Length: 196
Image (cartoon, rainbow, N blue to C red; front, side, top):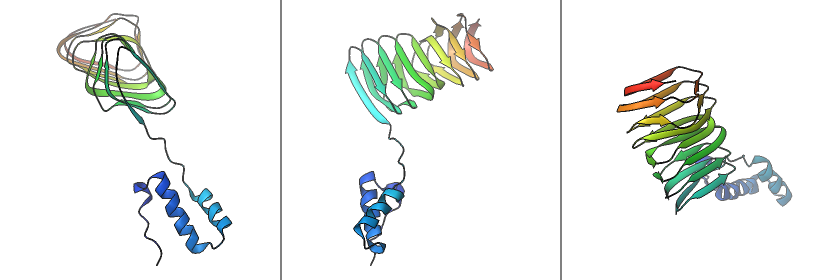
């Protein structure tokens, strides 16, 4: 009786290869043919985002693929450079500035984060959730920008958004008085707002 094979989506890369070899052995008596079958049938597996947690004075992290930020606790600055999307599955607590570069990719930091210094992002789009007040440094986004803050929102750098921008800071003030460029619609929900 042929071996039972689980659906590919539940297999690890190693068990997938072993299952393919077992299947190939049933229909190809030649070892050489079985090897060729496995090489041809093995699908390209997408890169698995790495999750990183750090507790230090400062940190600089580079990943050629997508990056998931776990619990980050820094008294100083955080610098992140990724070739894929950047997300957070933990809480970010950064005492200094935060700089994230993910060209053409999405940056989604929607945890209960605390970024004391200026937040700078260069990416395709960004969605940010922040527990308290937040200072926007240099933002360069070709797509949309979404920000939900539990405190006042200000800018110490230049904010450039190619798509729409939505800012929510219930009961707080929003002051964006830099040389900013909002190409799409700008929506703000707050107690007061001053935009230049």
